[in-house]
Length: 454
Image (spheres, rainbow, N blue to C red):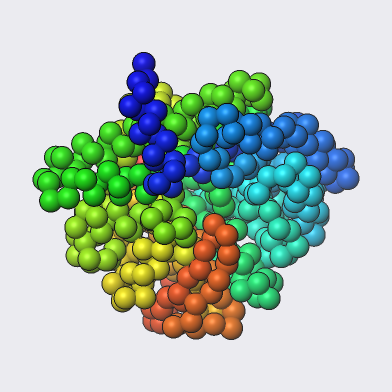
């Protein structure tokens, strides 16, 4: 039973501490849209998404009004398009038409992003996979709401270094193709190791092939709530700290569970998972870095940061799994630089470097996220950074990801403004030593010994 104190407490979280449901994401399988005729594929994709998602935004707004819970984003994820378009698409331009269809239907149903312009190539690439990957710069330059993700590694299969090399080139080409918008296209492109099939957060959301025809996944977020709770136990020992995070994560997840179940019932779509990730925004007081400071650090990046983040991530998961039987997606703490004012402040103060962020990704929810780097960074350097991050995910049996933005025409010391939830970011320095010979070897880094479990 929920008592009146808990209702008042939740209201306070919403009004003063930036508690919100970050996204309701409707996952839609497009496997039944496969056809050898490209025009028919586009028609089927448009019709299926439009029919499935036509009430998504209005339903989210109704739930938000009735319960007083802000629901910031309504989104769609679809089956990886490399699988859907493989039979019909003979050129990269063919795939771009599908991206434009996705963008058109996303506009018409009113969602802010549609994810799934994706390929899963952790062991090798089909011709369709490669065509889709090579189409990404044009696809993201000619659409507004389409998000792309490529899974290039996993604990079971190792790391596809051919794909890693190609993604370094595609990130740079996407930056060039969208340079008039400060290389914004790269903010909608993420490279994964161990990508989850049920992630509701962009840019990495896609609808996995093991999922039902349609599914509702919800992502909650409450960095401000956690920080406020911790401010009340300042100076207490780690046991008290951990209990406070767990209890707070439980309450936040219950809000997500409520919204997910309600959306599922009203849309007549099965409930999938609640992703209880602490996802920051540029708003003051909605920062994961501020939580780390509340734990006892001068800035994110100070000695102790990785330990503090590991503690936070683990306690969030422990509290969340008690609140919902179906916790999934990424579920932990995100550390995107441009979307977190505390992270930006740490970079500006000189406390946080790319290398320290990489260390932090060993224990956080995702990886090197929304990091602006100089526009003249070499393709191979980007590929080397991707390879490092994929190795962390592969060896540690966790999801890792890279969303780097080489901002064409800008260098270290300058800032770039993306706007909205994407925020702004200082351009961070990148190690200038070469990894060309490493990246150009080609082939695959084999799976680690602990992958052989069956």
